[in-house]
Length: 501
Image (cartoon, rainbow, N blue to C red; front, side, top):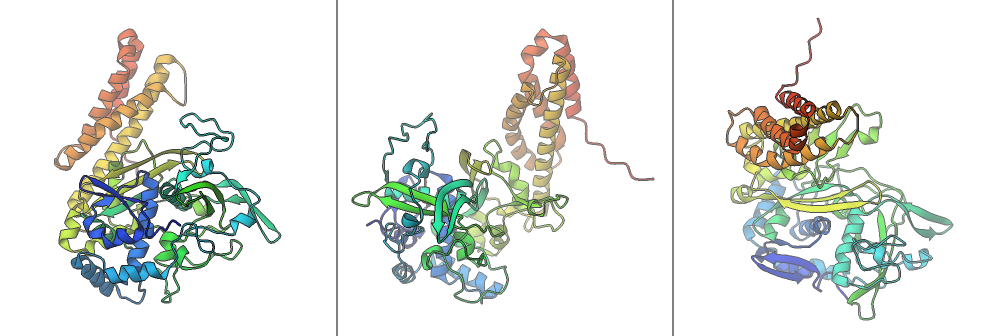
């Protein structure tokens, strides 16, 4: 039967060559692999967390007894070695069960769901992109009565998406003893955008991505990944989020079980239900956070940077390069705090892989996306404070100009049409064009530290507004006057608040 360790299912890229490997081969050949090449960014983001937890295991970087200097020295030694130790890789993978359809310990699944659930959830609900239940099949040939099996390699990637980005709400009922569970929480990464260090090889990527131990005291051997222990009782109290295994791999809110085809090469059905009713609060090392101390809801005072398919990655660059500030409104991913201790050759070449999944908080999946930044660690505040502040200034002016454009475009529309609407077409169209124009201006401004950033972005916003209102301005004098007034508003600097007398 299919083994996650030894059967091919992980897509990889080396130069222009693409291949599929199992997890064992992924580590044995990590130094020859350029990058992961999974087609679905959320599956790639999930797999990186799993692979980095395994990296910590096979290198000894999961030892909480190491001091910070010892930990950094060990990681440097692993990087200088240039490859993972083959004996350590084999020892780890031989120690655990990796069978996807194992009768007792199927990988990342709970075998008891077959008896705890009175019916399966269905393969169409399990595979992202397929219509489930009685939903209309707008873009897929699949339907409630045409549930085609899916290759096991593909099913494993869908499994990762459910564990990390799964939906919340009503689920397939699960009965344990006298209790029936009908609700599930959303996955730990739902609606998020992740930022992962990207090295020149997968070996560098995985070692650069290992988060340092910054939590409370942790006993050696107390941490466990799901495949290293039996499935927990969903009614049991919340367990501590230990480092790095449970932090990176043990926060799933979904219990799943795959039903194999006759020869194990396909999956024909699936159970998806709640794994736990407890959702621990923790800090993911690859997510950025925003703070709103004035929120009445304590749980909402810290929120993740949500994924947004319409928001280019460079607009988050200020968060990535600025050092942590206890009084700041945002916090960069914690993994950035460990990158300054990498060897110089690795640090200077390190890029950032962005994986985002634009979703609502419950069931709707809008769009996933990915991007790769240029090498930017030399721009961080620790290495180039002037560059970091310029980046922050340009990001701030770009965002403020976008907000002013939305405001003045709405005012111009209302003045021209004598109506008030919450979705004025001029504002939406102008913003779309503005953000397309703003990116090249942003990169140019980084090389021109003396150029007025507000004026540069305002010029692009004005051009965008004139473009989308051209026909109206030609036909109606009132539109021309309103747009001219709006353009002048784009160049006005926000007035400073008056000091109390």
